[in-house]
Image (cartoon, rainbow, N blue to C red; front, side, top):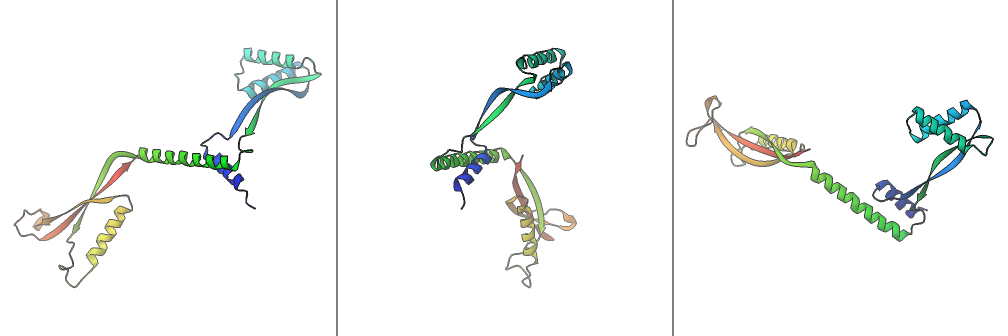
Length: 203
């Protein structure tokens, strides 16, 4: 049978939204099993410094050796003081109702993190792209009912949509011989449609 409480506990731990454990450090005297000799004292003292993350300076080494000697006073072998971490799992004795409340807290916390990322993802700037398409014909203008123009336009729009762009504006212009723009009222060689795409700049 599925242990729902165990599943909820694991999900709460993975979310890292709330503290699920309590860490206590205790110091205890550990028997190294080594005989009391100068070489062994030096060795245990060096291990002590490494375990604590202390610099192996002459002064620190001398202090560590003194610590080893004092810790071993009442023993036949060398002893050393070491710190041990005890981890208490705070969810082990949690009631189902408490686990459900914690799940809701984790859910809200993760939603807030997602919203924060979305807010930070947009810089407030936009970028544009411009495409010029020759002579897009309307239904009543097309000879022979060809769909070629619409197929190519759809492909163009979908290509930009896949990149996060949307159509910001559409306008038309007329081109004369030599590819020059024509003023209104003059006969043109062909019509062009200018499509302006826009998307938010993601940082």
